[in-house]
Length: 96
Image (tube, one colour):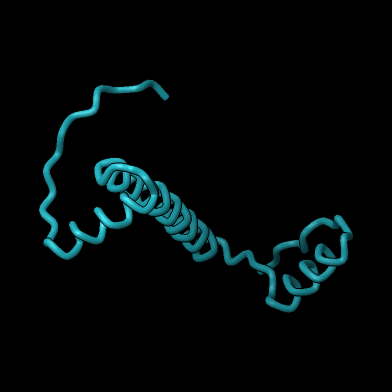
């Protein structure tokens, strides 16, 4: 990932949040600016992962609706129980 020039962005926060950020930044020996950038970065990273998971679920749901292939909950549970016991076995076969 290449570094790009940081550009200022203004956000409006109420005085209570501003004071809380300042207290936390002081406690962590960081600036309020650093703390807010870190919070935004962590939020965006988490939400990108959440959205990717949601998109994958929608894709899988569409595939299931198109072909009906699935495993039962009991089949999945039995497979996962084997994995938990350290047995590296293949997942159950999908069926209609």
